[in-house]
Image (cartoon, rainbow, N blue to C red; front, side, top):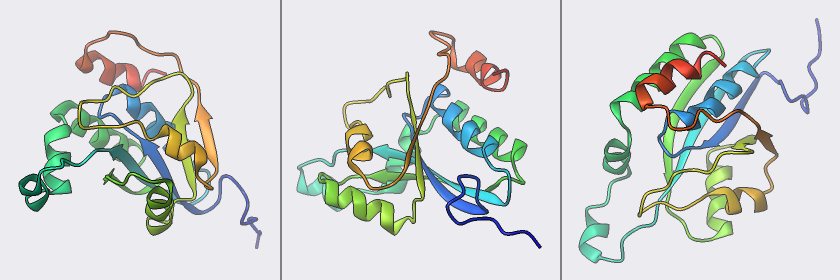
Length: 170
């Protein structure tokens, strides 16, 4: 019988948060998280941060599910399915979450509520945000959760279809 220390980076089951802009490029962190698993499996949370409208009508009919459906492209969805299939033995679960808070305390509560153990962020990639989105990196950097910065070569202006193939050639 072997013992695995609880502080080991590659421990049995952990939850990793990964910021996403719903581009194929941002999924490189998803692959990195799956490939980092040596023992057990990992839970992946793809995080997108969005600002809520000030309109009461908009707030009454707001649905995170509808927001996610409007942001996820078919190519992004296919890429996620391919990654989950390729790393099925290493990925316990993968889901998309939307954070709509405005404070560091709300973000910390989000992390604790989702039992996040680690956060992967890109070292040399800036999320491409839409008008309702905001960058989670400032909140992430101030959090108490361990952060791992991942460096990769950007693929530039390759069309999304070709980026999907590029994703698995790295």
